Image 1: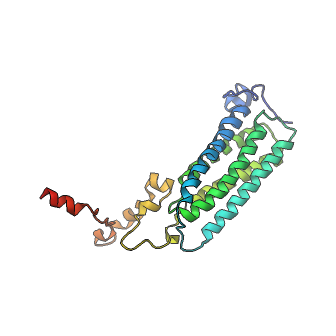
Image 2: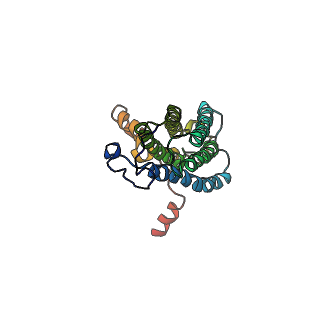
Image 3: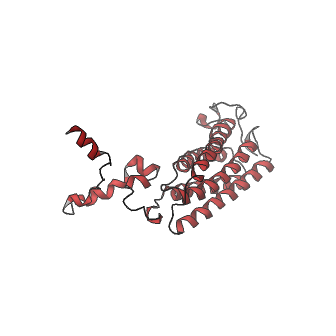
Length: 243
């Protein structure tokens, strides 16, 4: 038996005095923390796939990273199927959108599988879309998992959601790893800057500058560590016009 509250079937968002007064209603979590993130990915994934379909493969070789991504996304999809089965067959309390949320989660897991494979082969940097989605989903799953624990849901459903959250975190780590060493050689006369292959977190937190800060004072000359950017082709013409 679950310990649902009288307000769990309503949108809320606060559950009221139930569960210590510090929780969302189950209906609010199913809609805002489950249905909305999954539906957002399903809307954005086709647009991203359409962009990637016009690009050529960027990898020069296969790697363990690509294999681990495939395995992790397959396990992620399997856990989504199990969640859909458990939500469909459980006799515990469900809102009107609990099963629909699980169905959207399964559809989104297939989108993650396709998008992860395509991004790995055709993009030079980690997928910002997948990183953002998985980070948001990890936080949402943690909140929903806490609620299911407090409501004393069946152990099989709670365990499946726990595994699903762990796989989400694993996928987030894999999708954040740099793949610069796996890329095909750049055309002659061109060079990729370090920023061109960075993921979402490295870009926002400037992790790629850590090695420069750590070794800058230990190696001489310091100018050897500075990234040299070639001048733009129009610079000589502009200088000639000014002179």
